[in-house]
Image (cartoon, rainbow, N blue to C red):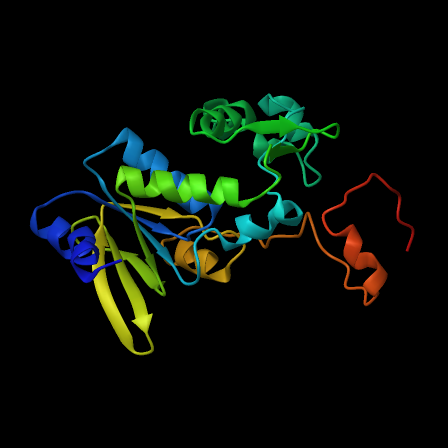
Length: 235
């Protein structure tokens, strides 16, 4: 990204009194949320702040195929009932606004052909996660979303004018201060997002893992990467 475009997103937007949305995190939720915001409000300046490479986890998800969503639990109730950590949290308004079928339709409408496998997992027909990554990156560019990498939102507070006062770290001891009208924290399990939410007055419940890995040093298992199966494990 050139310097002119980066400055347009931050400094020029504030000088022109244009509204600014800053998205913390360049993963699937952050990039998709940024695209959606820019689609609904084309005049809104949307900037995604990401420390590393955008969509890096999407690239390796599903054994490199990218498990997009679930094709069997297509309504909010059935999807929530299959969530291992409790269904009540999933019965809010989110899935009534945008559920698995909406996700599948969006990708299909943007050129990514999908398939539903026997166990309900949805993958691109190409069996390659780059189909999903390329689609999201292309749509972000087309809609005018600004992706800024190598940066971290170090702190957040509410300014006297009611905006989000953000301190963005570019390099060690190198910061820029930005005021945003809207802030979307989409940093996944990163402690950075938890810290920003707490700074803004939110109470937090310590997360617990729903998915985890076993580290087994056995080269014979390498060929099973990405394979899933229903089983009972006794420890």
